[in-house]
Image (cartoon, rainbow, N blue to C red; front, side, top):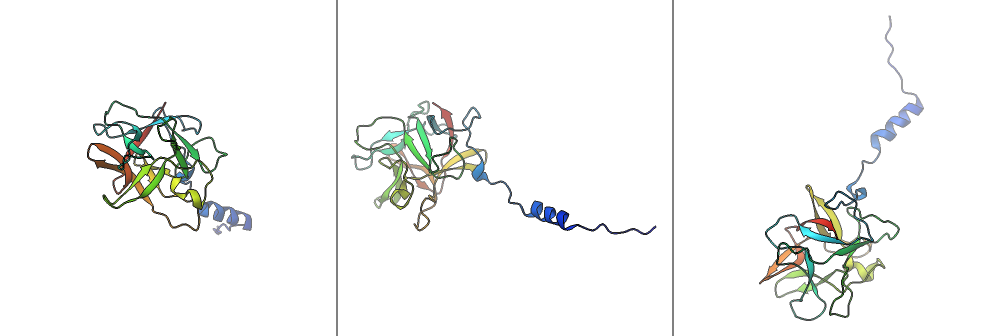
Length: 205
């Protein structure tokens, strides 16, 4: 009996091509989870805690290197201290959940002695120690050229998370893309751009 080779019809060929070349799911669509396994929500406060214990506690506001406002984002010296809760506001205000690789405002849900916002932003380059520090005083919302220094991202790092500065809210801006780490400045652990990421987890406040 003759064996005939099955032929692909135009419709089946089209379906084959669509399935073969469909884009694979991206981490960008994955929600960020808290320590209880729940999705981070924009209206909820969270403590940003270190994954590696024994090197300080959660994040809070502290004195800048100049001793003046704006206050700096620092890590608590005491390991058992959770610090201050933060909230996340995506550049796309229509979403209620926080996702990986998306531009976020990060801000402390607290009052300060400085008459400025608690929104995180990238400070100017500190030539004395050759560092870019994370400070407060940023602008909430209004993504674009004027606020490019105020946007951060959460990325996956193995089974943990890390904070990244690599804003994409301005297509024509040249920006630095680096991880956020900890710079030990005497007795103060300051958040700064770094080649060694600060592994973090998020605990609901």
